[in-house]
Length: 447
Ligand code: MG
Image (tube, rainbow, N blue to C red):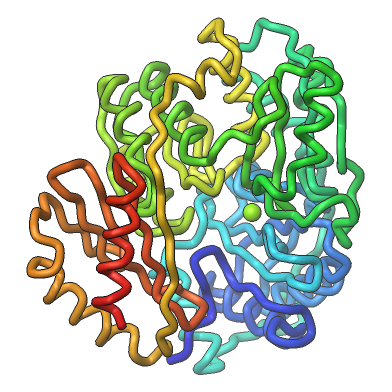
């Protein structure tokens, strides 16, 4: 059976590989899996194709006997929040996250507000490909309503942070869904807010929606020129967070995650969940704070699942997708943003001072061409030959590709791309030569 769901929902270029037909079939499959009853909440990001997808999904759900509550343009976290707080049976977010504007897609959430797990996605895929869609009689067709839950959401997440300092914050929402939330949330906490790219616009005219360093130069400039305390940035659907310090430097994702993880240990206790591609600075900070790190496959769904089974209070990916388990198991950019402020406030330091306390290790990356159908065989042989090639391995993780940890603290990850015909290699070590040589040896082995 072909795969429909990637690491974070179904995505593609609109009207090319993500078509109205795909969306309709997905909605009908969801309604069928819910035994043709129940309420679904739907949110969307501001992409130009989001209305199109919302309408067709709504029709599919109605045909399948579900009622629909439309949330309008909201960050992804609000769909998770609404699914749980409105007692819905599932939630759908229409978004392609940080992808360019020509993309769109959907992400499903369960009644607790957690993203659909691979098992649940498989159930949807089976119905989808076997075309086992069930429809209801005319008298069973339910209704559509609109509901606003943003105020409740903002009140609830404001309650879980304690921010006394009146921060001056520059916030860059990429013209995405968080434009509706983060500036107001910050104002509610008494911050002086300067907005950038915070009007909804699905063409993302301000900057590409991925909140990475090269796309945040304008934010950095404004933080510096306005003498702000911090800059915050989101992706298109507002489930990611990035930050710039008071000197206008973007904080590396691994370091920000490490700081937030240590802060979560201090505040809530419990283990921290992160993905196999995260830096060892996360382990260092978490161990120093008195806890330990549990690694999962790449993807926020894996992080959420592991957090649930470990009863962890915090987890995240270096990309800035954080899950604050004290509120919910849905990645939440606005909440992550105000938690950063709380962390800075609590430390009595500036963000750059906090970042200075985290070690820096060189990371080396490479990608090697590999046809999708060869990946499994190649990975198998890499795993078999790794002990001879790399020697002093102290830990081997095979939950997503192959991650090797070495006696000197270096680690190497060999992982097939989930979507492209590549195998990616990443190494981190105390010095650059060691990282480079690990990647070199892995490349040679792969070739
Ligand atoms: Mg996103």
